[in-house]
Length: 245
Image 1: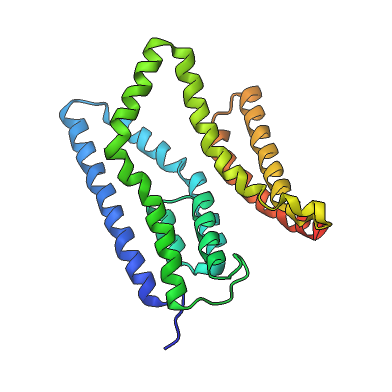
Image 2: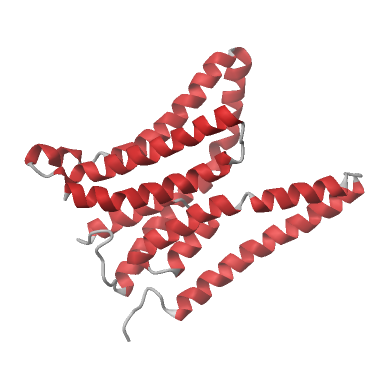
């Protein structure tokens, strides 16, 4: 029996887990609504907040759909659908899948089929690696947060600097992946510039969204900035690849 990354049983398994997560969300939503009535919250204002929050989740959801489509080329739909519906992000999932495929002599985006063994290996790499954060939070999260709070209480300026440094350090890890093939340009192969140019396009679009928000006061633009940067950045990869390949 041939293995398929889009096997119906994989859709069933992924669907069961996603339904369990959705059930938890509905459970806590119902409990929250009941509690709001007990403490006398304005129900009309609460319903308006819920509708507004629901509408503005559409834009981030577009980014998730794009991520699923990107990964589905190699991994099929069930695994990316599960990963990005529960825990995960395009940047992490792509890097994890790419590294796992590279270790098996495969090239991400150019895989026509996977064996069951290769599929399970990639799934394990993607799952176990990201679970490190889940394991670390109960172990060191409280102490780390307490330390950050102490620094902020002692000197707010240094607290802001430390928070910014931690965030920049996280971004720098992903930037290394973008520039990892940059050295190919020194050997006459400009293809290493493709991810760099795509990143620049996405950054410019994000900056334009920020300027629009600043000049017009349209805060809703911020909810659509990420999906627009993703969509237009990916679209720019087509002409950029044709130009540099």
